[in-house]
Length: 168
Image (cartoon, rainbow, N blue to C red):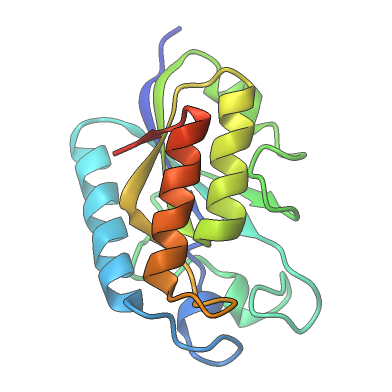
C-alpha cells in the first residue's frame, strides 16, 4: 500500500518555545509559522501528518511529566494524526516509525533541533531506504560553538544533501 507523502513534525513542543527552560530560539516565531503552514498544506493535500515528541530527562525542557512536553498548542495535532514519543535523537529509534512509513512515497521532516533530532532522523530514515526529504527552512536550532543558528541549520542542510537526503 502506498502512503503517498508524509509530513513528520519533530519535537515542536511547548518547552522549546515557552522561554522557561530554553533560551529563546532565533526566529522561533518564523519556524512556528512555517511549520503551521506546512501542516496546513499537508492536511489540505490529504497527506498523513505524524507528530514526534521528545521525552527528555527530569526537569528538562521536554520532561515527560512537565508542561514543556506537550506539542505546542499553536500546531494542534488532530485526533486522526499519530503521535509518537521518542527518548533518543532519531525518531526511528525504538518507536516503530520505520514500519509505519514502509511504502511512503516521500517523508518530509520539519521541526527541532536541526543539528540533533532533525539530522539524526533524516539520516536514519535514509539509511533504512526511505525517501527522506528535509524542508530546508522548516527546521531550526540554537546557536552553538560560535556559530549562529542559521549557520548551523545551513550546515545541517549541506551535510544531509551530501549524504543523499533531499533538501527542499
